Figure (spheres, rainbow, N blue to C red):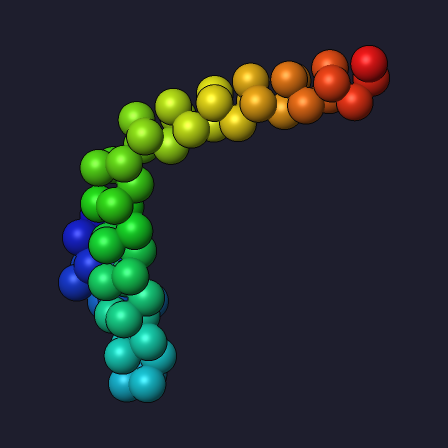
Amino acid sequence: MNRKNYNKSMNPTPSKLRFLSLAGGGVGYFRRYVRKNIYIAVYLKHQIKAYLKILSINTII
């Protein structure tokens, strides 16, 4: 669903519309950023998990 149709269906007041367009832009940027960096994020998540396992092993010993 594109943003124009979304705003029309909501029937917001002008201030709400401005906020929504800003928020929508932010969300779009965030989505693009996530899509670009999702493999990095997944990789980091695995690295962090491994690191935490190592830490927990060290603290137990």
